[in-house]
Amino acid sequence: MDTICPGQNTMFWRPEDIFETKCPVCDAGVEFFKDDVNRTCPNCGYRFANPKLDKGCAEWCKYADRCFGDLKNKPS
Image (cartoon, rainbow, N blue to C red):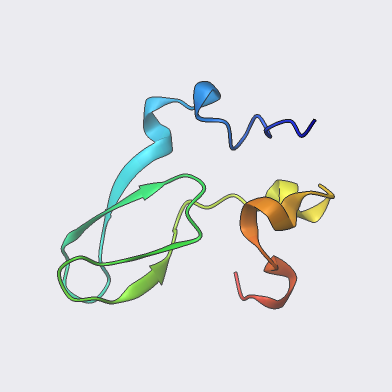
C-alpha cells in the first residue's frame, strides 16, 4: 500500500501553505498551493513558477517523481 508523503498530505498543511502571489506580468493575484510547481494567471494567462516551492525532498526521496515529475531536468 502506498502512503502519502506528509509534505503532500493536506491533513498536515498549515494555513500558510495556500497563499496568493502577484503575477509578474499583470500584477493580478494568483493562488498557489505549496506543492504547485507552477500556475497560470487567470487574468493574463502567463504561466510562472511557484515562488515558495520547496523542492528539498526531491533531492533524496525515491518517490519525488510522483509528486513533482522530473525536476532534475527543469530549471529552479
